[in-house]
Image 1 (cartoon, rainbow, N blue to C red):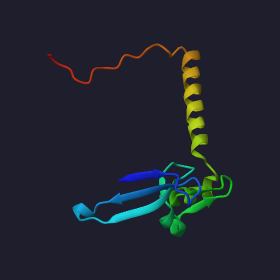
Image 2: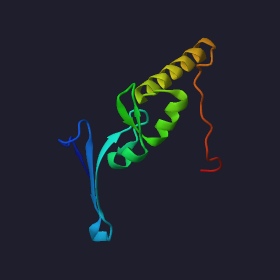
Image 3: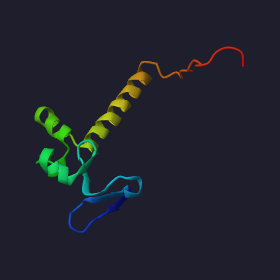
Image 4: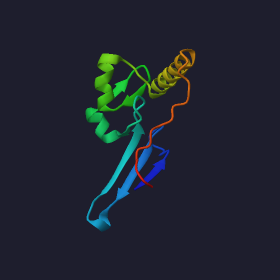
Amino acid sequence: MTFVIGTPHTHNAGYFRTDDTPSGGKKVEADIQTCIHCQKVIQMQAWKDEGGWCSKCAKPVCAECADRMLIYGCEPFLKQLEAFIETQFRVESFRKLAGLDTPVHPQPLITGPT
């Protein structure tokens, strides 16, 4: 399996190539990009039949994210990551204000004689 980044005929795309002919497989080549919403690798030849397009990001999205966009709208991966980090920060701040920031010692998983 080989990934060649930056093929000249597609902007911001990579190129996927695998050659399993010695083991009885077949040679597969495809232009690839990542979904801007979930970072899934999209094969562009298959995407044109089942994928979607985010007009806000102006990027291709996978079929699952295209369906999700109908309900939730545009949700870029970076925005999801920032929301997760903000939530973790708020939880830590709340624990500190509530006096729950004492270290928790985990219970041993294996008990008995050693």
